[in-house]
Image (cartoon, rainbow, N blue to C red; front, side, top):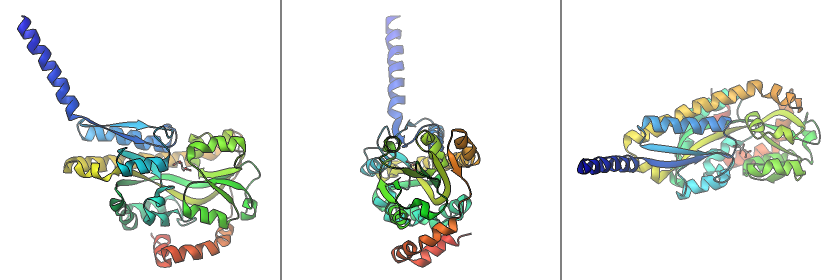
Length: 323
Ligand code: EAX
């Protein structure tokens, strides 16, 4: 009797050891709340990876910059101290300059145009530029169309932006453009934004409705203007060496899981955009809906001239005219 109990006990332990050894755990994070378009992305990615690899890979999800800011997380993935991250392209140009062209204000007609460019040859080509920088970019996701908020005044025309102290992402293209609009720019990580607005360190910030709602910025911002001045892509990044070590089947599983994640991420952005204005008005924000974007584009003419020198007019037009 005793002997069979020992054998049984050993079998159970061996079983645990085998399954534990067979399962690897990886971490992925975002800089905003789980209840968000980005939370949907990483939660879906985690579920899909576990399902598609038969449980051999478990993805632990972290929110609210608990593992670090977007910039710190991109750096950690590049170094391999963190396996994955889902981030807006805000800080990306500091690591992959080729992605900067996507951050040009008023470059895309709308989300459909941006999604077509990112999922088409132009966007897929830019994804390959991440490889030599230590990343496997699994898929383009979506952060959304960025709008201005502030505590000073409604923004109807570019003149209303003059002298406003606005938090920006750590993105050189955004900073150059916003300065061109007369904004006093303060680059800062997302986790510091709520407090900076609350304390009046800055007057305003700019983000998609999805982020404004997820970060509860209605609690510290009075005015929202639907300037729609930038389409903000997101990207699902994995440490390149870790991706390369996966079997061919698991590489495909990670890529397919990323595709599923982005589908639901974009669907949540559409949902947020459909209900966001009413929601934020209901929270007491003063919303300017009809902003004449052509006036902002006109003021940006000198900045566009610089961008054409930086990126090439043909490259910019290729994106602008993409159908
Ligand atoms: O990715 O930093 C920002 O304004 C981003 O839009 C935010 O972190 C979500």
